[in-house]
Amino acid sequence: MDRPAVTEWTVDHLDELAHDPVMADALGRAELGLVRLPHGTGEAWLAGKYADVTRSTSDARFSRAALLHRDVTRLAPNPIPLHDAVGFADPPEHGRLRRSASRAFTQRRIDRLRPRSIELANRLLDRMERDGAPADLVAALYAPFAMHGMSELMGIPEEDRERVVQWAGRIITSAQPPEASERAKREIEAYFGRLADRRLAEPRDDLLSHLLEGERAGELTREELVAFAVLMQTSGMTAVRRNSSSMAYALLTRPDLWQRLVAEPALLPQAVEELLRWVPHRNAVGQARIATEDVELGGVLVRAGEAVYSSYVAANRDPAVFERPDELDFDRQPNPHLAFGYGPHYCVGAAFARMETQVMLGVLTERFPRLRLAVPREQVPWQRGELIRGPRELPVAW
Ligand code: HEM
Image (cartoon, rainbow, N blue to C red; front, side, top):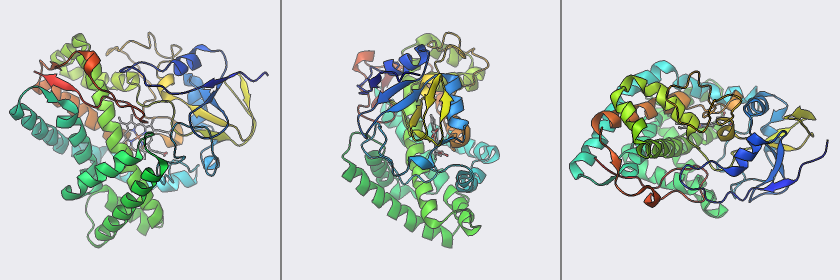
């Protein structure tokens, strides 16, 4: 088999929620292609088709652990944005690390959090209403909701939350020099270490206390616990804020869909699944996997030691699985999207993120049925040079 030419994936800024042409190419071509990203060395295979993505993310011959200490071509300047033990472990080690968090994310616990989340969304929207139009929906609702929601789940005291947001902002980015991210990483880890000591003395019904139970049961070490808690806090907060802001933009620029949600609130869970599928959550790709032996994938032979990226964003637009994939269709059923990933690394916070997303959109459509963008769509400012996409501000009126 001939090796294909390498595509330079420069990851230029994409307009609003435009689909990345490199991902579209990965879906259109017969076989896997090779890409080179802005940082790191060498090249990597890019899997974009649904079948190749689900296979490469669930086949044990593609390893995350083998990625450690490798300088694989990548988007972020920093090889590992956080001390991400869970992201870089393979089963069965991986299952051990996740067990204690899984206990905290049972559907029953998430359902119990829903009324508090509704209350929080209402409180934030009360303030937005009082201050009057126009308002920035990111600052008024999405940023504080994602921050307080995740912090309450984790058990972060109110007065520390702003600091945590600042650290997270310096870590989850490809726009900062590595030293700035490194410093933020050390500071936030030290903070979580101190908080864990306090919770150990005084356990509560929060995620940190659940993780500490796991530590007591010998499931994870203190170092692993801190790394995992920091990872969940920072990635959870950022992912929900940006993803939901993108969803709101998609709806406000398609008033027929917004009106449909207002008129048919029972459609909400299904609409959220379709929005999750459709929103291009991140720029380029997250962490690669390394083939531990020669494996055939997507019509090519991936050699032992080579890196493979799997794009969930691309797979969510695969016409082999989703009819008219570029269309936002609230009646789409079934909808086996991969917005939360696939295989053992499937998003640990998926049920929580889904609940939060439903709550924010539900409360917003109920209270502001006439919500609209307060500026022409071209004037909405977008995140640039970031790992996770989304509008920076969303000026609205009602
Ligand atoms: C709409 C919001 C969210 C989206 C779209 C999302 C998406 C994803 C995706 C695609 C992955 C899989 C990456 C892979 O294959 O390595 C992932 C993993 C992960 N997510 Fe989320 N996520 C969201 C919210 C959250 C929240 C709220 C939390 C924390 C509570 C969270 C914590 C994590 C963690 C810790 C992992 C790594 C899991 C592992 O490697 O085993 N995410 N997420």
